[in-house]
Image (cartoon, rainbow, N blue to C red; front, side, top):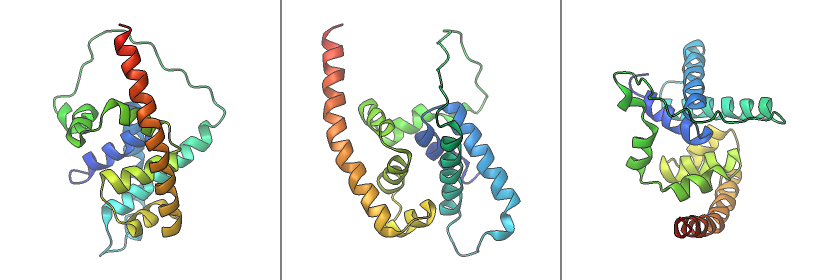
Length: 172
């Protein structure tokens, strides 16, 4: 966990879009790793293996939530007590480290879960198509197709979201 915890959490955060779900997903993934440690094949990428576990857990959670109305809790504006080592799990710092704009984050949230995962793995985590196919449990052709569609969708969404942000900024 010390070696791969932060990367796993950041990937889970980008998939889910919120801290609580990302923490739950990361925790469940490491529990699964612990239980299935004997099935890990030495010589293969541990990071790819855990990303596949996170991706599958996220898909399962989306299936469970399908049709369930989720409402965000209102902001209470109360200070939050952060753990002493909060920098290790700071999604905001991770976003700034990767230089993702709020526009890009918003656009990524509008993609399907599979498209978002493929874009994150290819463009932010720099995995090969073969590694992504192994993580996503699909063919390389499916990876290419999803990535192509996701990038096309992002090319449409990003300018639209920038324009909305510009209009909102000028109306303030």
